[in-house]
Image (cartoon, rainbow, N blue to C red; front, side, top):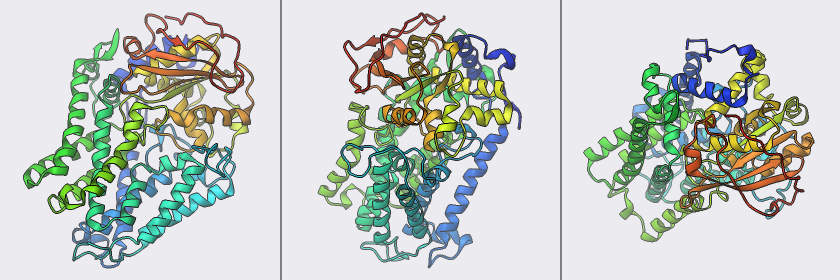
Amino acid sequence: MGFLQADLPDVDVETFGERPHLERMKILARHWVEYGFGTPWSVHLLYVVKIAVYAFLGLLFASSTEGFGGFWEVASFWTQPIFYQKLLLWTMLYEFLGLGGSSGPLAFRFSPPIGGVLHWARPGTLRLPPWPATVPLTKGSSRTWFDVALYLGAVATLLILLLSDGVPKAGQPADSVGLLDPRLLGVLVVLLAVAGLRDKVLFLAARGEQYWVAAIFMAVLPYVDMIMGLKLIMFTVWFWAAFSKLGRHFTFVVSAMLSNAPWLRIPAIKRRFYRDFPRDLQPSKLASVIAHQGTVIEFVVPFVLLLSTNRTLTTVTLAVIVIFHLFITSMFPLAVPLEWNIFYCFSAVWLFGLHMPPQYGVTAISPLLLAALVVGLFLFPVLGNLFPAQISFLPSMRYYAGNWATTQWAFRKGCEQRLNTHIVKAAKNQIDQLTDLYGHPTAELLLQKAVAWRCMHSHGRGLATLIGNHVDSYENYNIREGEFVAGTLLGWQFGDGHLHNESFMTAVQQRCGFAPGEVIVVYIESQPIHIPRQQYRVVDLALGELERGYVEVADMLSSQPWLDHGPIPVHPTPGPPTSNQPRRVEPHRRQTRR
């Protein structure tokens, strides 16, 4: 790996695509172990610069507040409540414009490097209403000028808030220059709610499960209660992120992530994260220990910070959680939530370091309000862990646990181009973006590397098996990550398979009119916390649902990324599919190549 040159497998790029699919997965998975994605250093430097720009602009917005001493006087005003409010809203706007997570080459966005505003400010692009059958005036999958106005209205409101001065609020500190106007915050809350009912992607991209809730607290709660509410948001994120990692999926995430760390340069060390490279790529005990250490940190830290009245204990705990978030940032994970991690470093210090109990603790607010805040913040995570098919993994706060809803798409060769010609979007398909940069053979290899990355996770084995069961031959299709398909067509992606479920498939089919057998999609739902299996569905875009059933988590965990012992067992559900679309005749089944 060099500053500009990517590290590619030692293969003949021109003929690599002619090899059998599972053989390619074997080669690419083994290459991932030692080199990760092989991204050149210049890309990581680009993200470091992006973080610096995010921090600089956030400080610039916040420093414009009346009563502050100007940009260079940050030491005199960083403790002001409105400073924190503005940094939170700036982070929300940064994500809402598409500049944060899901941007740049590590999110497979090359030209242009963002979706976001380029997509959502354009009428005719796809949108996904969450409840079109029950919420009036939300049906349809095409963005209208009304949707564009809602989006730009929310952006404008965020900018007005960032440039506004403080107003008095009950309970604010004596030296405060005021807080953000609750009326403007109320406008933002309403606009984002309405926009989210028209297109759930907007709400999720704005990280509504955190920042939208925080905006409500800042608008309606007195100062001390607001601080406690903001603390509980962070507590909830940490706690449920840790809880979701108690399953057997998370160690696979950690081993693959460590292999991709740009600062870890020695292949021999990376091989230690796997049981027996190159034969066995199951995570090793070392990877398991590292994973569980992170889980313990996320469990223990929020309780200490929420309850500690000891300044030394709080300071040490803050140092631990800041290092934890910086470590995650240094991994440059593929969804690149880098600015979010930096903001959480600052938030931990500002909320828990400057506002310690008992003055800003659980005893400082009424028991009734505390109970309401806890129930409200815990409701969606509890439901999401029990019923993951009903709740997105973002409101469920199951971040980076490896237990995700996912899809893989099989396009019969020659059909994928129809996404470019029939769907309004801000960017070409990833294969075309990469082809413009590297040529088609290398572009195809890089996209297959993403599929191999998925195969290194537990559910990847299930996806590979089900694709193989429902196509006549892997080699007649281009296998694509559903997250990247959706990211181009929706303007944003963040590992949420619910964004490319049947609603999305229907919208694509309405525009492209694929023939039977041209596009096969496999959807695997997240594992409920109490059931050791994952539900799946197989869909032909032209014919509807072909099959549904479940796969045992243990069967996926025991296989290699290239299905060394053949397809893993799947358990179809007897009877007709529940989809209201017509069912195809029983698909031809074949043995997957070993």
